[in-house]
Length: 250
Image 1 (cartoon, one colour):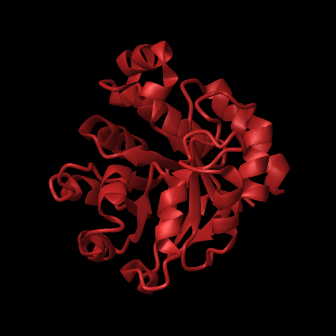
Image 2 (image 1 turned 120 degrees about the horizontal axis):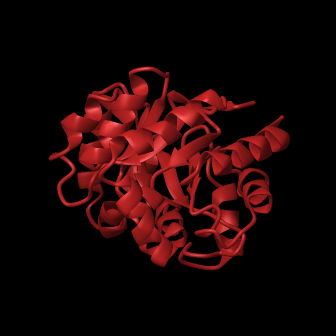
Image 3 (image 1 turned 60 degrees about the horizontal axis):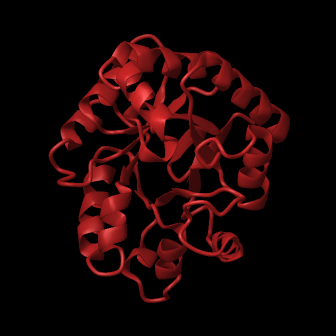
């Protein structure tokens, strides 16, 4: 199955990620080259979004910078791209209307905001959730520290336990960049109610440290991830990922 229920949304199991387009630090020297190739060239990013659509996985996870928003808009002109988006962290209200124009399926609080506010100022996150629901989108939180975020959410009296929302978090079988022991993270994920707190995985390939088939098998089968966002910089990489997902998911 190429699609799955994700809260109130229905998403492809595989999304085109956008970290390489931003030259994220985990990619080292390659990141700078990818940034120069993609970040200020929405048409190049849109080409890869469209390729995911043509492969039967019509979805992208975007970080809501103007050029990436424009890339998603270009792709949606000709293809039924489903968008999940992480709002920018400094002031999520500033680019909210730009994201809203894409009619996104899911909108996440950025990981930097989650990690700062989750255990101290949950009311700020709840306010953002309300705005997201007003778009008829499903709200979620991203985190850069899966271990800590899951521990906080498992606190019985945490305000967000009354909410329903998606989780976007690092998950890979190296335990790279997940913030704590891999076994504990997997155990905590296993205790989440996936109907109320569906999980999307990022950093699934550990910035290229893992083979895609092993990495996706772990994410979908062991960590019970429903959706994986994986960044690519070439159509051939997307072809490989799509073939693996079809083989794993049937």
